[in-house]
Amino acid sequence: MAERLKLVDLRRQYAPLREEILATIDGVLTDMNLNLGPNTRAFEQEWAEFCGTKYARGVDNGTDALQLALYAYGIGKGDEVITPVNTFVAIVEAILAVGATPVFVDCDPATYNIDIEQTRAAITSHTKMIVPVHLYGLAADMDPILEMARPKGIIVLEDCSQAQGAQYKGRRVGGIGDSAAFSLYYTKNLGGYGEAGIFNTNDDEIAKKVDMMRQHGAQPTSRYLHEILGFNSRLDEIQAAIIRIKFRHLAEYNAQRRHWAGRYTELLGDTVVTPKRFPGYEEVNYVYVIRTPQRDALKAKLLEADIESGIHYPIPLHLLPVTADLGYKKGQFPVAEQYAQEILSLPLYPELTDAEVERVAATVIASVREFAPTR
Ligand SMILES: Cc1ncc(COP(=O)(O)O)c(C=O)c1O
Image 1: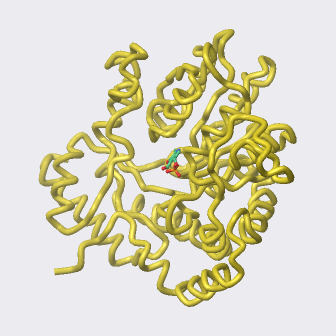
Image 2: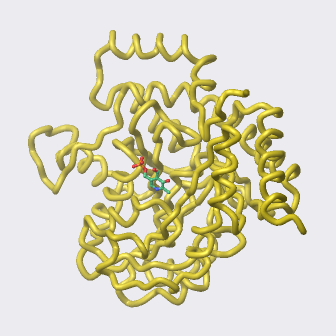
């Protein structure tokens, strides 16, 4: 029996990098410059350059990157922030933390990203921000969002946590909107070995605020003079050093992810609904998400065959207990609600082998045929 195939197996990526990573950590600890040290500073510059922004500020995690962005823009009580319902909960946490109101919209049935026309319809005089999420590694359709936001002074904050290196019409995500938040959690396309995140912006004032807020609201030059509401959310120097090593391989890792995603699509044919590719978009396949009405049975069958799978995400944001007070109802976002019942993420990471991808695809095909013998 083959070994259980994990949904994400980072041990394989670590093995060839091990010596370099251990030597680098040793260097960081020998230097002992751990508070916004040289690796954090260097990575901020490298990341800003990569994304084409003026500033990047390393923070503790992606959720903080979102939350600090909302605070920096002064979003608060009475303000509305538009976000899709089919994403990770972090953005709702950030909106609720600053006392603003999340305004939910459904996802586009083809891209799974924020629905453009619903976003337009959701804008009111209270809308202060739109947060498109580049879900599963595919950029959201940024141009129409920017076109509807700009004349009204609405801020566009990209949530790039699942899309490090993804491109939209030749531009890298994280440098398209007004500002951007990235998780660098260890399972992401680019991540450390723990918690990490980064915030990008071109705005001098916002960059300065985030810089202060991540270190207790003080300017770096006057450490104990706390001027604005602060937090403790600095990118950890050891994580930054690890991330810099992995960053050098990001293009190759993303190309491998795209390769395996393409291979799955080719092998699966029309057995299940597979992710589409769109001209002008270069996706980075953070996860490979298929759809089938027999999702739960398929997940069980895969596990029987020692193949892990995931669901990103099983409950749309408007149906979570934490948002119950907002008054949304089941049935309001039919696309996301249907997809939440049907989506399944198959193992996807750069170090997969062709035999493994074939094994997963063959198991999916055999299982689905068993459920629906006439297909
Ligand atoms: C779309 C999205 N936004 C935000 C986050 C939050 O990032 P973190 O876990 O680093 O706080 C994540 C990942 O976990 C995510 O996938």
